[in-house]
Amino acid sequence: MKLSRSVIALVLIASLGLTGCGKSNSSSPPPPTANGATLDVGKLLQTLASSTSPDVKKGSTDLYLAMRYSDYDKAGAALEKIAADPSLTDVQKKAVSEAQEQVKQMAAKPAQ
Image (cartoon, rainbow, N blue to C red):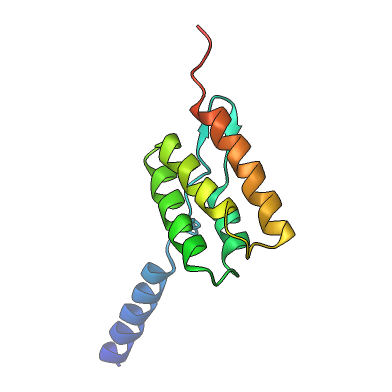
């Protein structure tokens, strides 16, 4: 009888320990912001995900890495490479164009 109670107690304690404290595990970091401009790279990459072009896929990877390290010159070059792809849809072209403007604003030197 004591053994079954201790087994039940152990199972209960283990199950409570596994439930955690209820914090949400948000795996995506906030969008990068600089000079008052914000670029949601994740949203842009979702828009470009349906493209099968190798240039768009490579450009998307380059853009992600450049934005991760705040290298706005490389991010702009990656966006130009993506924008030059003729297989983009109108929605994708618009998203890339908006992203280019945001990256230009992010790369601008602040007024002194």
